[in-house]
Image (cartoon, helix red, strand yellow):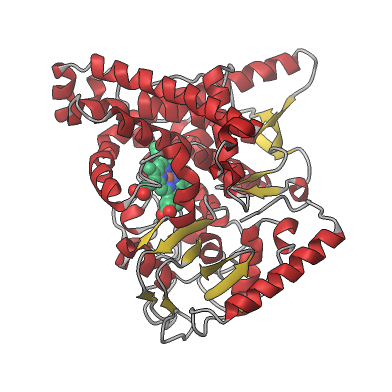
Length: 534
Ligand code: HEM
C-alpha cells in the first residue's frame, strides 16, 4: 500500500495507466468470492494524492462499513464497524493473524509479539504482559519525568540563549524533539539503556532511526523487492538497513548479556515482593531476566526488545505531536490544561499520584489518539473461512470471508464515524465524560464511561469497540498504560513551562503515513516561556 504526502504529484500519463490497470483489476476481482460486498472502485492514482486512510474514509461514507477495495494485484476488505471489529479482534481473534504486517515486520522484529506466529505469541505474551503491572508503571513515572525534564532543560537553555539577543521565543520542530524524548524513555524503561538522544547523536541512535525509516518505506511500497535474492547486498538502502540492524542487535545483545551476568537473587526477591522503590534497575528486561530465569533464549529476548523499541517509540512521539498540533489551534483548551497543571503540580514535578488528578491532560491524550490514531489501520489476514457478523447500519447477514482474505480495520474511520461521535472532526477532550446511548444500534452497547471502572483512561470497553486507540482483544497493545502515562507526563511538563503556537498555518502541516501518521516536514512551533515560571 502506498500512502504518500498530500502534495505528491504524479505525471498525468503514468496516472492514466495506473487508473486503467486498477479498473481492469477491480473488474476482474469483483467477480471474486466475497459475495455481494460493495466494491470501492478507487483509482490507484488516489493513493498518490494523499494518505490512504483519507480515501478509505470517503469510500466508507459511500459504500458502508464493510467494503472491498481492489487495487494493484491485491484486494482488501475494509472494516469501519465496531461490531465487526470486535468480532475480528476479540470474539474470533485466533482465526486471524497479522498478514501483510507480519511479512513486513518479521525481518526487523523476528518472533517479537507483533509479527509472531500464534504459538510463539501465546508463549511470549504470557511472559511479557505481567511485566507491565501497576508497580512497574509507577516506577516508570520517574523515568518519564526525568526524561521530560531533560527535554525541558534543553528548551530552557535555548530560550536563555535567545533571550540574550532580546528574543523571547524559540522555534523548534517539536515532532523531532518528541521523537528523541520517546526514544530515551523506551530505552530506559524497556532495557535500562540511555540513548541520550535529546542531547546527542550516536551510531546506535542513527541505526534506530535508519531502521524505523526502512520499516516505514517497506510499509508504503508495493513490491517487496527486499525479498529478492541478493537484494541485501546489491541495493544500497538494503545494505544500510542490514548494517543498522546489526548495530542495534549488537547493542541489544550486549544489554541482554549484561542483564544475565548481573542477575542477583536479592533483586529477584525485591521484584517478587514488588519492591520497585529499592531497585536500581526497574526495566522490563530486568523483570524478564530476573523473574523468568537466566536461561531464557537470547534471540527471542532480543526480538521482544526490538519489537517494543519500534512499537513504543514513533507511536508515542506521534501522540504528543498531534496533541500539540490540536492544542495550538485551540488556545482556550491549552489554557484550561495549563490551569489544571498549575493547580495539580504548580512548579513541582509529575508523580504517579498527580497523574490521577491530571484528568484534562489525560483526556487530551486520548482525544488526540481518537483524531490521529497510531496506526490508523489495523491489519489482519483470515486463517480460515469465516462469516462476519452483520454491521450496525442494518446489514443483518454478514459477509463470507474466505481463508487468506486481507483485512484493514480502519481505526481512523471508527474514530471519525458520524454514526458514533457528535462533531467527529472537532477536538473536544470533554466528550469522553459524557455517555452516548447506542441509539438502537443492534449489537453495539453504546458509549458509557462507567463501563470500565477504575480505568484512568477511556478505552475500547467503554465505547464497545468504537474507540480503539490500542486495538482490542488478546492482541491489544501491551504498552498502552505505559504510553498513556508517558504522554501525560511529557505534555504536562511541557505546558507547565511553555505556551506553544504553530509557526505556520495548520494547513501547511502536511500529513504522511507509514505505520503512524506524522508530518512531512516536522511540527515547527514557537515556544514562549510562561510568565508564571520562576
Ligand atoms: C500492539 C498502539 C505504545 C508495545 C499495539 C496495537 C496498537 C498499538 C493499536 C495493536 C496492533 C494490532 O492489533 O494489530 C500503540 C500506541 C502507542 C503504543 C498508539 C503509543 C501511544 C506502545 C509501547 C509499547 C508497545 C510504549 C512497549 C513498551 C506493543 C506490542 C504490541 C503492540 C508489543 C503487540 C501486542 C501483541 O500482539 O500481543 N500497539 N502502542 N506499544 N504494542 Fe503498542
